[in-house]
Length: 394
Image (cartoon, rainbow, N blue to C red; front, side, top):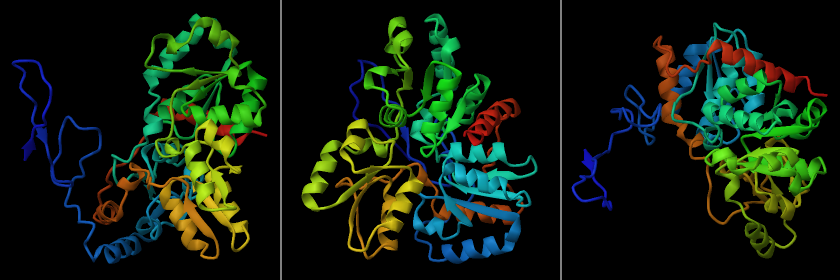
């Protein structure tokens, strides 16, 4: 089946038909990587899915270890052996050397990290290869290599230490390791940046500008003027050599599509709607949002804050909706609301649904390893150096 859109095209140019393909049954060779799902994908409404998932998991036994990210939907979390943030899950995978299959219910960069940290005999499986991360995709290897050339031309590269957020591709982690840098999470970004400034006088922070800016200004005591924003889509990143020479933190122009939607107006509106509410947001939010909030912290911080909150307290949470809904269900004695008035799931994370999980598990039972994620050995070696440096942070 095909369709054409009403396009404003030059005279004589015919519109290209758009392929409308059935999920799980057809594929478009020009589509993004991994959109197709070979095999017969059961529909989400299939009432047998829960039992099929349970049966497949029991058949595999200790051969399989299922990881579920905090942002996953509940129907997937129900079958996870462990839940957590991206790095915790990769560590959990590494701590299960006897598991033949690691099924990562998360997104692509997370599965890459698990492959880097697990043994070569273990297979890391991502149930849907289209489960990517828009933030990670905002920094490609070629773009970052070009940025480094710009830094060299400005005469500052020798003074720059890269710090890359966990939410980055294996290629970017490898780049970071090759240039003597470290990886960070939202929990240890301060320690990572402090360490970097003992090794050089400047930081290249990839790929989330908001985490980098918020950490530099709110936790390191730098000013907004100490930070510049490198835009990979502009010549020279849109910066002059003088700006690069004056800056302490060079931020990459990337962001999280979920956390980037929150605004200072969202904070003002929820305060008006719920008197006495505590606003708690993730540091991937914009600087003006974290400045307007009461508390700022990682996913783990958010979970612990709600666990410790007194009964009857009210909370507006600025992070992914699946997690907020789960926290609200776990704390019926508290008022827990989503910071924004409109819903905001992580759309790519939500590609991992129960049909895809069932399909992946049943493929493993049948002796086929689907959607295995592997990282090229040299990239993996340098990426692991950067990850090991993070683990060694004081």
